[in-house]
Image (tube, rainbow, N blue to C red):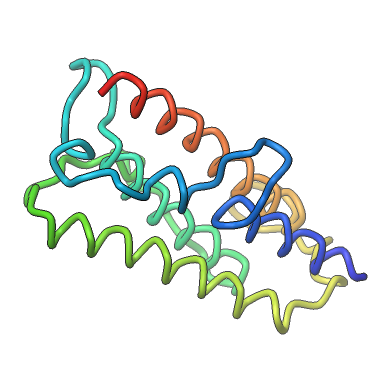
Amino acid sequence: MSESTRISNLYQSIYNGNPWLEVNLDNTLKNVTAEQAYKKINPNLNTIWEIVNHLIQWRRNILERMQGEVTKTPDHNYFVPVLDPSEAAWEQSLQTLAKSQESWNAFFEDFDDADLAKIYVNNGHSYYEHLHGIIQHDVYHLGQIVILKKLL
C-alpha cells in the first residue's frame, strides 16, 4: 500500500470511518440541529457551526496548496459568524463538508507519493506535513465539537 493511500484512508476514517479515536466527524455531527450548532455556549468559544465552517475552509485551503496554488489565509482564520441560522443553511454546511471530503478522496486517487516531499513555497513545509497537518486540524476541532455537544 502506498503512503498516500494510507494517509487517504486515515483522513477518510476521521470523516466517516472507524478511527482509532472512536469518533468521527460525520457521526458526531449527526442529529445536531441548526439551533444546537448555532448556540454560543460561551462568548469566548466558537459555535459548532463556526467550527464546521472553519474546517471546510481550511480543507479547501490545504487542498489548493496541494494542487500547486499559493493561498493566503485571511486574518479571521476562517472563523466568521453564521448569518443564517436556519436548518436549511446548517444542512448546506454539512453537505459542503461532505463535498470537501469527496474532493480530498478524488485528489488522493491521482496523488503520487513522490510529491510528498514537495515544499509549499509560503511556509517551507512539505506536502507530507500539510497532509498530516490537515488531519490533525480536523481531529483537534472534532474534539472541540464533541465537548461542545456535551455542553448543550
